[in-house]
Image (tube, rainbow, N blue to C red; front, side, top):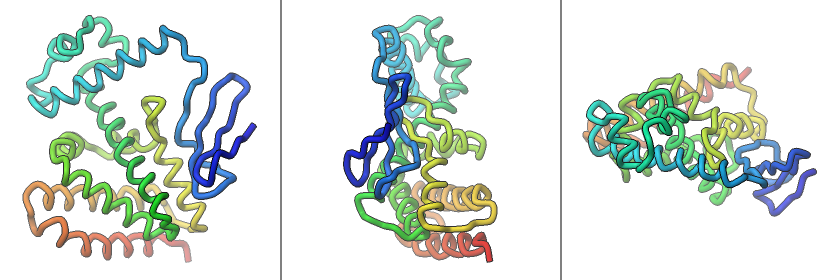
Length: 239
C-alpha cells in the first residue's frame, strides 16, 4: 500500500512489515532510495550500532593516520569491541575502506539530491550541474573527506557506492540517477558510460583544483567543467 506524505515523500508498506521511503518531485514516486525496518529487534539494533561504531572509528583513523598505518587492532581497540566482532562485518581493513567510501559517497550524494529537490531544479542538465557544484563545494570544505574518497577510488568502488546502499540510511543513487533521466524524458545512449566520463572528469580536475589550485582555483574551474559536462550529455543524447 502506498501512502503519500507530501509532494516529496511517500511510503510503500510491504506485507513483511517493512516500509520503503520514496522521494521524488511529485507523487506517484517510483525511485526507492530509503528503507526502514519497522520491527528491528534489540539484537539487530546492537549489530547496527556496532557496525556504525566500526565505520566511524575506521574513518577517523584512516583520515588521521592513513590506511597503511592503521591496523585492525587499532580500529577495534578504539571502537571498544573484540577483533572477532570486526570480522563479523568486514573481511579486512580494505573491505571496510571500500564500504566507507560507499557510505560516505552515498551520504554526500543524498545531501546534494535533497538540496536539488529543495531548489526546485527540473531540467536534467541543470540537475547534473547542480549536483556537481554541490559535491565539489562540500569536498572543498572537507579536504580530508576528499583525500579519503579520491585516493583509493576506482570506478568499481564508486559504482558500488552509487548502487549498493550499505546501511538503512544509505541511498541507491543509481536508482535516483535513472529516475532523473526518466523524469526529464531523456533518451540517452549508454547512460552508465556517460556518468563514468562525467565522474572521472569532475573527480580528477576537481581534486587538483581543490587540493592544489592547479591549474586554476575551483571557482575558476567550474565554468569550464559546466561547459564540458553539458557537451558530454549532448553527445550521449539519442538522435
